[in-house]
Length: 247
Image (cartoon, rainbow, N blue to C red; front, side, top):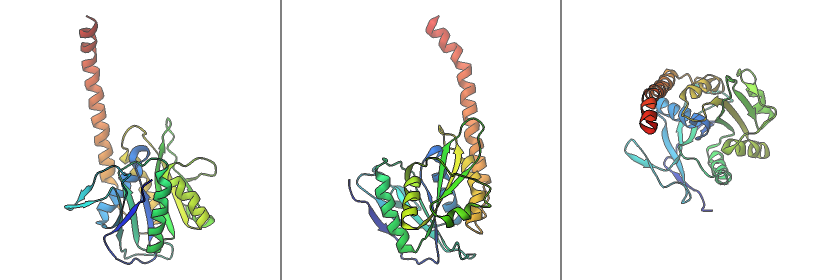
C-alpha cells in the first residue's frame, strides 16, 4: 500500500482547536455537513492528504486544485476551555476499508501537530422505517460525559464502521477524546435533511457554531421534488412501454 502524503498550505497556528471529521457514508451526511460549514464560515485550506492509491482527481476551489482529502481551519472569536479554534477534515471519496487505518494514522499526526485533543466525527447510519433517533458515543469517559445534554441517544452497544469506527478505538487507546455523532439517513441518496439535523447538537459541542441550516433543508426539498417528478413521469410512461412491449 502506497504511503499517504501530507501537503501543507498554511503554517497558521490555532488555539486549543477542535476537529470535525466528515467523510462520505450513508446519505453522504458527513461530507454534506462539513462542506456546508466550510462554505458558511469561509474556512481556508490548510493541508491536504494524497496517495497514489486514491482515485485520481482534484477538487478545484477558488481556482486552486486540491487533493481529494482536505483539511480546513479558522480562528474563532468565541472560544472556551473545551473548544477553541476550528479544524475540519472532509472529502468526497470513499476509500477501501483497509485504507482507513493508514488514513487514521496520517490524520493523528496532523492533529498532534495542530494541538488537537478533541475530534467530532459525523456519520450517517441506515434509516429503518420511521426510526429517526440520532446516536452518539465516545472514546473516553470525558467524551461520553460531553454527550450528556445533546439530546442524542447514547450508543452503549453496537457497531460503528469506516473511519469513524477506527478513530473511536484508536482514540480510546491513545487517550484522545473522539465523539461520534450518528444520524439515520437515506442509504440510497444524498440526504442534506439528515445533515441539517446534526447541526443543532453539533452547535452545542462547538459553542457559537450558529449556522442557519435552511439552505440544507431547501436542498433536501429540491431532491425530494426531483424524485417525485421522476416517479410521476415513470408512472405515466410505464403503461405505454408495457403495451409496446407486449402488444
